[in-house]
Image (cartoon, rainbow, N blue to C red; front, side):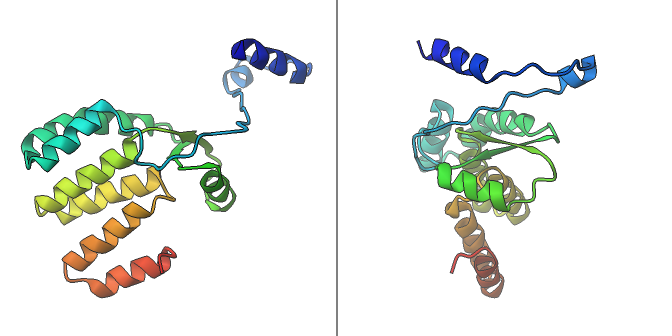
Length: 181
């Protein structure tokens, strides 16, 4: 029934368009305004794969956790391969609207997704911290921030890592620069 209503609404809004070349037709995209989206934290509704990884981390089995998270990270990174599209995760409509109105997306289409890639990136960063690899941790925190730019946990994790490295001043600057005061 919902599909029938959506088709009727689409047909009612369609207007006759001038003839287009094949290249123009291939670049079309249908954008739909979503009137209601269930709110939920970025880290809610995790996949079974990520829940299993979290259990392995709690059991301090980092080697197996690193192996199990790898396919999830590869899937997330493959989704971001299109330079014309910015895939982003938000907790609610307010975050999406704020980001859409303030972010420089260089003409990219912003796609709001509900997935666990930001959490997977943050989890990988946590494992890098545990392994003493700050460079890898920062790289995965950057990926998590890009995927969920309004998710405070990735900002505080970066500040925590900087403090753990003895760089308290850098942590404070990071927090202030990102309005975490």
